[in-house]
Amino acid sequence: MPRLDDERKEMIDLLRERGIIDDRVLTVMMKVERHLFVTQPFFNRAYEDTALPIGKEQTISQPYTVAFMTQELQPRSGMKVLEIGTGSGYQAAVLAELGCRVYTIERHLELLNSARRVFEKLGYRIISRGGDGTVGWTEFAPYDGIIVTAGAPEVPEPLMNQLAEGGRLVIPVGDLTAQRLRIITKVNGGFETKELQGFKFVPLIGKKGWEKK
Ligand code: SAM
Image (tube, rainbow, N blue to C red; front, side):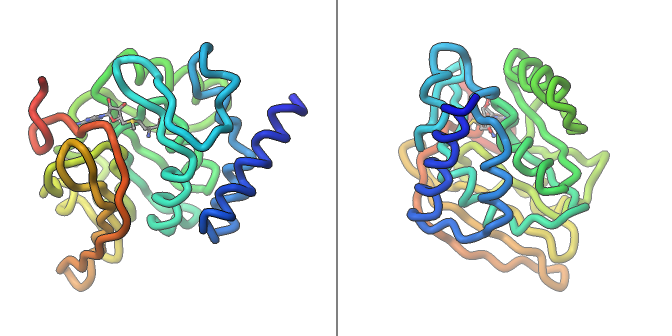
């Protein structure tokens, strides 16, 4: 649809203005149709730079957040990536378009099933499961990248343990009102951490996350 293509182009221009510099990330976000990942009442707002409700009190992340986190993950073609918090499936689709082999976990089965339907419709070979992602997914570990799309009280140790040498973990950490993005890189068997700007995410709920209300 030409109108949506124009709106997506405007979204990309805005991301560039806001400081996203990785052209591969911008190119892929120009290609992936975010409106296919949002629910009907919000269809017309799909290319606003804002998070939108997807049901179960969860959200599809703001495009700027997706772009920033993806850029920080430094994705390469063939890289094995674990995502915690499938949600709408949009972030997973962006990573798949970048050539990553994507594994994703979602605790709400209803959201997972609707994301799976979109993956199938669009032909993405993304491997997914329902459950608590704070313990990672040992079966396919280690991962070259792990991206957590919900806010954690602290970094879940199982995720650090499932990083490959040179791998990067991108995770928002903080309290329930605001988090800062942490980038943890596994170097020579140890971990290097840097802390970046603040974001506001829905909580990461699970054994190594926040307790369920
Ligand atoms: N990546 C998603 C997207 O592109 O739409 C963003 C989804 S939302 C910001 C975060 C998601 O994390 C929610 O769907 C939530 O249910 C999920 N979540 C929270 N805690 C989780 C956990 N322990 N394991 C798996 N998913 C979790």
